[in-house]
Structures are given as C-alpha cells and as structure tokens.
Image 1 (cartoon, protein in one colour):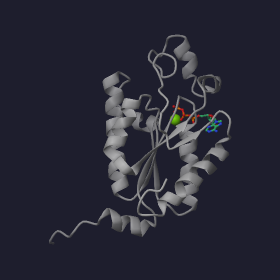
Image 2 (cartoon, protein in one colour):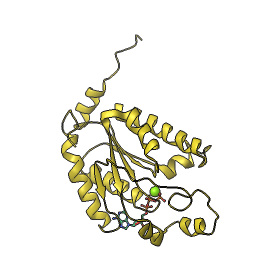
Image 3 (spheres, protein in one colour):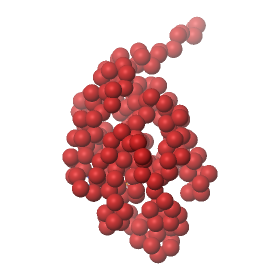
Length: 196
Ligand SMILES: Nc1ncnc2c1ncn2[C@@H]1O[C@H](COP(=O)(O)OP(=O)(O)OP(=O)(O)O)[C@@H](O)[C@H]1O
Ligand SMILES: [Mg+2]
C-alpha cells in the first residue's frame, strides 16, 4: 500500500477540540506537584480533554531508570522528558509534567525544546512546609545524610523567576489549586494560539 500523508498537529487538535500544550509543575519535593497533576488531569478528563501526566518519579522508574542525580544525569532526565513532551504535544495532548526540575538552566531545556507550547507553574510551598509534610520520608533521610544532594537540603531549588502561575501549595488546598490551574489553563486551550 502506498504511504499516505501524515496527519498534522492541527488536524489532531481540531479532532481533540483543544490545542496541545506542555505545563511544568515545578517545586520542592513534597510541594504537591504529583497531587496537582493528577487533580488537573481528572478535571480535564471530566471536560473531555486529552491529557497525560509525565511524573518525575514514574519516569525515573522506567524510561530514565539508568539515571541518577549527578548534574549530567539531572540534565539528561529533563532532556528526555522534554523530547517525550514534544512528541505528545505534537500529537495534540495536554502534557502535565510533574518534576522538581530544580534549576533555571534545567527548566530552560523545556523552554527551548517546547517554545510557545510551554508554560511553568510554580508550586511554591516553603521548605518548612514541605519538610513538615515529608510523605516519603526523604527529608528526614536527607537530614541524616542518607540522601546527599537531595533538593532543598543538599542541593538548591531555584524558584522560577517568570512562572506563568504561582500556586502557594502551603496555603491553598489541593482543590483550590486545581481550580486555579483549570481557570488559568482552560481559556488558552480553546484557541489556536496560546493565550495564557
Ligand atoms: N495545596 C496542595 N497542593 C498539593 N498537595 C497538597 C496541598 N496541600 C497539601 N498537600 C499534600 O502535600 C503532599 C504533596 O505530595 P506530592 O507527592 O504531591 O508532592 P510532590 O511535589 O509530587 O513531591 P515529590 O517531588 O517528592 O514527587 C500530599 O500529601 C498532598 O495531599
Ligand atoms: Mg511527585
């Protein structure tokens, strides 16, 4: 059979009824990125929109299993996520990335690869709040010296200076954060050009 013309991004977006876009939820460990990514996805699903969550933990458990936390590995972790996100955006998906991505220079990899299709959301709960939550016990282990280079304790987290949206996940409830995310995101999804 003769090869047929490929289906364009615009055709996929027209079929989906919304544009493709990549949203990074960035913040300290335990700031609420995964919780909000799942909440946002559930809300988008209810609206009949097509989304996928790329969670840093899940990526590190599979696609990026070979990577550690050295600077070069953190960079490769982000590079692979950005390539995957670009493929999915091209496929008309709303890609919700839940990744610490602690440094400005790491997040720049997403910005460069995804261009106008990329937005940053800062989950800005403070170190004290995040450490107080510590659902995985990682902060406690880091304080004992068992996790050298753990973000927030042994290595820095640089807040995004130009986040499109800041959510104080230490003050707002998860439900309030999801409502704000949706209110910010939804209008921009309906247009051909990003308006958010
Ligand atoms: N406003 C909020 N937004 C998100 N999570 C919240 C909020 N308030 C409280 N939480 C709680 O904080 C915890 C955040 O855990 P979560 O695993 O989502 O963080 P994370 O940023 O994905 O961490 P990690 O970097 O370790 O993956 C959860 O127990 C969640 O219920
Ligand atoms: Mg998480």
